[in-house]
Length: 200
Length: 424
Image: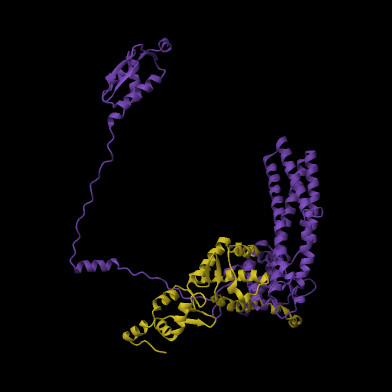
């Protein structure tokens, strides 16, 4: 990995990277870059990956690349706004995936789903109680889809959204989070019959 | 009997422990002392041994926990159990036959109400109305609880271990479908077998009829109001029943038909959605130290840099800047109002009364108020001509008067003392 040590060297590298400014702005807004959505930018990023990583690292940003075809600026702790957005997006993807699972649609082919108003209406109807408790209606779901679009989890095309591979970041977490819930709700202490004899 | 205030206070202080105990009640009805202590330790890890024992003592003293008769184990107070389950949506599925029995009871109460209206017996009516209201409330509450219980069953089935055989996984769902949803659907049916629909419709009719009768006959407002409110309850309940039956069927059908995709991902999602339903989104995805959490990403906070006033002062001093004096413009009066248009009309009328008879009203005005603009003068002329303080007479001869800007061609009014006023 080349480390940028002086200005002229930086210039030289930067001259070879015509999309540096564009990519930086893209990631810096919190957007995920998806291979299938932005093939040209992705190709450029992958071709000069070492240089990009070096420059972004020097600027204090951690670029992460996932083999399933998406990249983002990583950070361990989100701001309060990001935390709120990520909770809501987690919920959005959960209700969409749950609805699709009920319909018997294979979940891992989520990139082929067409998410339009009709589908969001079905999603809303199937989770009405829960979504209303979170103060979300159909227009709220539409708003969340736009948020997802802003951060590079979906793209809007001819009247419907398409989920992008970056959604895998959420899917990776769901199982782990569910096992955490199991730990929290663990009532194994109640199954402990042996202690009963020496109680009191 | 525990004091209610004391009990709710302990419930507030020991909520986490009680919640865990109530959840565990599904698996075992009574707990040993060791088990309760373990539950307290898990819910409040910060407590030391003495504090844990103190917490147990308080739970017992306040009546949240009770010692089971003829044994040394503890049970959760039945009221607390019901209350906590209601709040945390951890209900067991009720029996459809309970709802059925309550609906049958509606029929009895409706008959009492009809008889009370026929006989004009207010006491009997009130009794029947109260009974109906209680029944409606109980049914609505049970429908709500059952809906959550069904959702829970569905979530359990959906989040069950993927390796479990399908027949085992969906056993509770199939049972719930056959024992609850099917009978409910039968009850909700609008055909002859649907007792829910018919009894409620009959109760609504009786309430409407009673209301109309009493409005015609006249009754106390509060009594009418009660009747009307119970009528609303009945209508709402009919809607709720239909919606609940529909939702329960929607929830269970994909499972019953085994159409649902079942894998680790969908089961994890169901588990999490169940938590969101019971606890809300923020409590489900609470951030904890050293635990994996939802994905986050870096969003740059845009920062604006602007020069502070201090810097401006320093720069001004360095460049020996002297500010120009800018004088504020003097105050300008608002558009001048011509005082000439103002006139004391009462005074004018009195003057006119004194001068009666006046042969030509307009000429009189012109003479006494020469400074008035034409439009004011003409307005006064028309106003005065319409008043009945004086007798008006129209001259046979037309005449022309020159005012300040216009000249008027008209038949002048002659004003004289009115007859009745002179007599007074």
